[in-house]
Image (cartoon, rainbow, N blue to C red):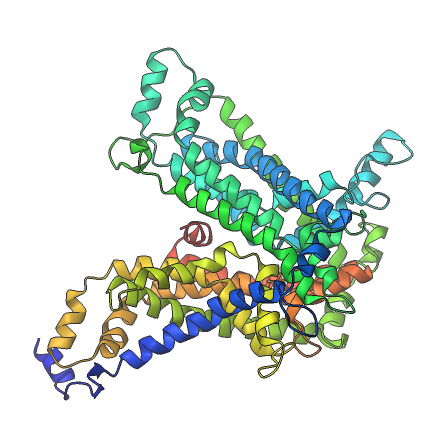
Length: 575
């Protein structure tokens, strides 16, 4: 106590108009939050009702957006894509989550690691890998099939609606795995023991007892997968456009062609935003229901179920899923990255390091795009952590009467698809007087806003874990709230803040859905560069650049795992 008295024996903080000067900080944070979240959304809605050129009120944008059959078809294609991808992802994830969480399946830690590897693989990287695997002519699976059977052509065609469903499901099933495994780990073994006493075997107990208890979590994961599928841009752009069908996100991209029709794009984005908001609310209700006492209680022993010889079948299933999402894609992605021509196959005379040298030292913008991605992501992650920590503190300590509204604004970007958010930022900040279109600032603002929910959820949980009496002790000794934050709260939250920073930084380095609408000639990021290379058919260079992005991410994952736990990306993102 003596040392505290010495540290905080300075005069009490200055007051401005009767307020503690730290109120200026809170007001600044609130103003930034309004600038990031409210302003783009308001401009998005207003733009959808503005006539091009005059700015007069009109409904013509909506008539244009939904007056053509192919535009309406794109909307229904998105809904079908979301439903198909979510159902397939559920079929992949639920058995896997049960095997990892409830059984004696061997290699459960290894399987979790493979799910994490899937989770951190950008969807567009997975799409490129599956183009190499299942392209209708040169795809490796088709070539192997022809070689083994003597058929004239292989059966696989990634450039199709089912192909797009499969690719998206393979890289979104970790969401369902996260929700389902978290729920299953709370199911008491007593329920399963009762079923076994009544004659049910392990498989029947799983179907009749264990999984039904996790239905709210499973449904919540399915909704997240649905929302992810309908909001994706890169995978549909790489697969759907060559297959000659559109979804909402690719159609929005075409509205930004030459000439750009921002007003029509804003109107066309409204149903996507509405569906997302509605389903996000349903998902929140499902995953926060408290009526399932078995899931929310803390009592009861939890023992792994003995599957006998079936545990190897379960492990085989896990390896099949991992082969489709990790092993096969990365094998052929690596092959392409080190190949003079990826179609020539695995031979020593086809191996080269020139692809990496080209993207790092010869290509005009590839290396700069990597630097831009990491620079913008670093600034966005830092800004996001500062903003969400401040808002979480304001809400938790009830410093303002409308704290609940601030919390809502922080998590609201979760229900705004990246492409819709980008259109909002374009409408709000591209025209004069700010004229930010194509600048680094608009990308940083968009990335910060996009990942505010991740930062806020983690900051809020961390703030609630700190007893406010520690801060009050600082204030009693003359320190301000800012001093308490700097000297007490921040040091106690170092690991949590590191986790939140990494959880924002890593996805921001590969964000494409918003970047594709906002980048300029000098602000191209690596995700946009990879997309451009895919359109040009430069798969060798693309594969090298995609692998570099993954390799540069690995040290960050190692730091996070050492500081926060093995599966911090999975657990903390699903919080």
